[in-house]
Image (cartoon, rainbow, N blue to C red):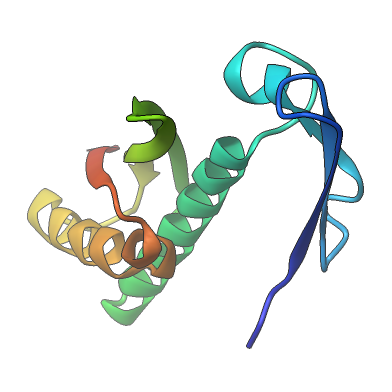
Length: 140
């Protein structure tokens, strides 16, 4: 299975602008720029997309862990906060902080914590990130 996305950039790094398009067309010529990445401009940025990918991947991985253990979530709501830090002359993603609010009937806190930890460590996006990954969760 392969998934593709395309980036097109025109101009210099600071004054230029680009677009991102995904194979599924969920993003189609989505604008990104220096302002949307490093300040508060209109459009998306690579770190926001990594955060969305990590939140989605982890949440689905947890749903499968729960299913395998005989549970079905009423709701799993995950936020991923990706941190971009300066490193030398460039930047790197240093962390992805997952915050999960879960509603899973009939599961103990211990079992939920075990399954959430497995999902966090084994979702494909967690595996590809060379960053600190943390998970905070609440179960109601």
